[in-house]
Amino acid sequence: MVVLVVGGAGYIGSHTAQALLRAGHQVRIYDNLSTGHAFLAKGFELIVADIHDSATLSRTMRDVDAVMHFAAHAYVGESVVHPRKYFDNNVASALVLLNTALDCGIRKLIFSSSCAVYGVPQSLPITERSVRSPINPYGASKLFFENALEAYDRAYGLNFASLRYFNAGGADQSGEIGEVQDPETHIIPLALQAAAGIGPPLRIYGDDYATPDGTCIRDYIHVTDLAGAHVLALQRLAPTGESFSPNLGHGEGYSIRQVLAIIKAITGCSVPCSVVPRRPGGSADSHRRRHTRAATVRMDCQAGPARDRFHSVEMAAAFPATLAA
Ligand SMILES: NC(=O)c1ccc[n+]([C@@H]2O[C@H](COP(=O)([O-])OP(=O)(O)OC[C@H]3O[C@@H](n4cnc5c(N)ncnc54)[C@H](O)[C@@H]3O)[C@@H](O)[C@H]2O)c1
Image (cartoon, rainbow, N blue to C red; front, side, top):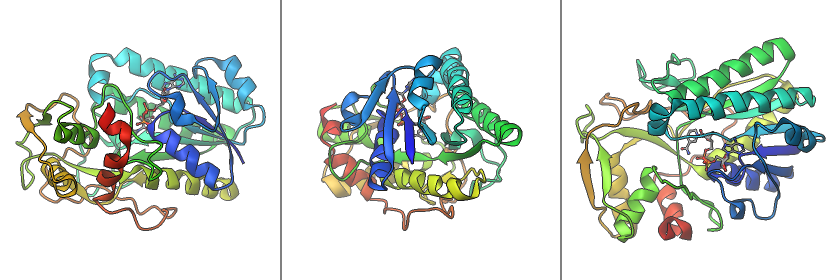
């Protein structure tokens, strides 16, 4: 299939582009490079343009069979302070992308949704049937697009997969691509930088959660597992035409302090850190439950056994740009 990877010069999109290529698909990347990097799209045709540019999208989509939509702003805290920026890009521009795809006759779309659509879960584990009630504009923007996809499916026969990621981590084992974000807000690269002495001490946002060590428990999924799930989701969409919306996580949560302990076990370095107050708009899996199980990945198109808890850290540590940032 010819697959347009929109946002494919970013972290998860670039890993998915590689996975699609390995699976025999023809891949084209479309990205405005606002947070992405041309080097992450190396080896692919890269169209540098914005998703609100319907004319360029139409030209690019002429022979495309399926669209994977990764392009979004994705900082929860920023979305609370600048909601307009989030609704402009993640909703208004995303609708231009969706409508253009439809006008070009494309009926398969895979969307990067988020566990942020669930807000504060009423019970655990979070399943696909849990109530979707986001608590920040970022999550609301993701839910809006999920709702649009559901309506377009009913009205226009669009087949979609909304993949609700938990927290992505790690890097491709080639060491060529990985996470390069500025500002970096994700714990694994930040903690590695702090441990290496090239970043400030890690800030732990709150240690008063009702978890065994008081720090927030999250579910982390390896970016290579995430990329593989996209390929499988595309395989499943094609023959059945049935839309679906799975959670994509590891299935087990880890607290911030557990992540720091894993980093110490792998690198031999302690992570300097300090505890600061909780952040506004804190994410869905920052729950207060005692049980650590935070999410389910067991979608029927899972790539195989999820990589173990050490692998995200090992691969992030092996990606040179993590420590060069
Ligand atoms: N990283 C995570 O843990 C995580 C978790 C849940 C959901 N997600 C979602 O996954 C997707 C990818 O996230 P990521 O971590 O790879 O982020 P990223 O910032 O690395 O990738 C996003 C890419 O989209 C591009 N982009 C943004 N707006 C665009 C526009 N208007 N036109 C064209 N290109 C545009 C950026 O330049 C970037 O290359 C996002 O939709 C994000 O909300 C990520």
